Image (cartoon, rainbow, N blue to C red; front, side, top):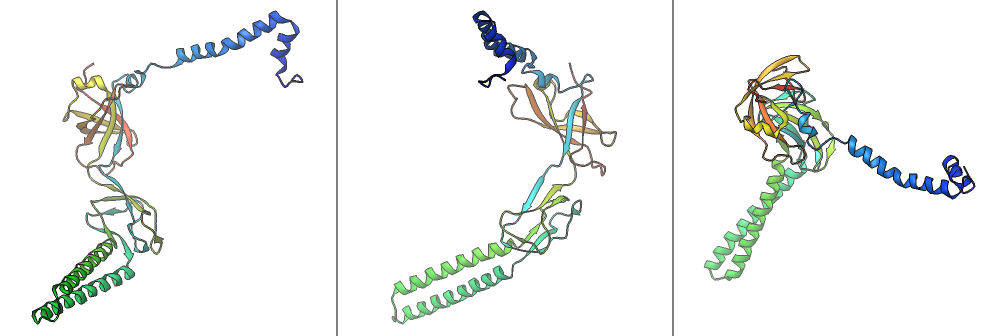
Length: 278
């Protein structure tokens, strides 16, 4: 290192040999980025490389199994969890209770709102009778009717809150992950359960866009699942709506024929198309 903080080797060689050496070193230093850029350009793969690497030498395509629906159940209330019995891996039926909250406070507010409806309705009936007797004017009746509508709206709002005090399963499936536990206090938006729909699994894959010449919904293929070392029949469900302009690829979704207890979402393997045309 010289007194000016420059690296010793190259800097000293340039200065001790005079101007010609310094000019040569400077020229070499300026040309270095161009050399690096040239090497990088030669090393970079063409934009079509991803599409070419999708299929192996036997024409198989990488695949991954997934559930038709994967949902995160979250809280819509600020409340304490009263019931959350399911754990990771547990199965459940459609409509089965997944989570229940302690909603005593919200239920009492609903009862209060419903009592307000009764009071407002009684006032309306009383004012209607007084109008018949010419004791009050129509303005007082209109005010009472407005208070009745307000009480009904408040009760409807409280009723919708109480309806969120329990969460039922939207479909049958299994619990992928539990984020909370019984007796835990949660706020709106707090994740509670990750659930996966059971039944037929979907097969996710990305294929070269040139396969569109023969690949259509309904085409049969075989999925070789690596985790099990077995093959399962499948068929194409739907094709993606847009081709990637860079990689010239298209997402494709298939489905395993039938239900197989050994198959789980997240398993991977290879899709083999007997009808594939080169």
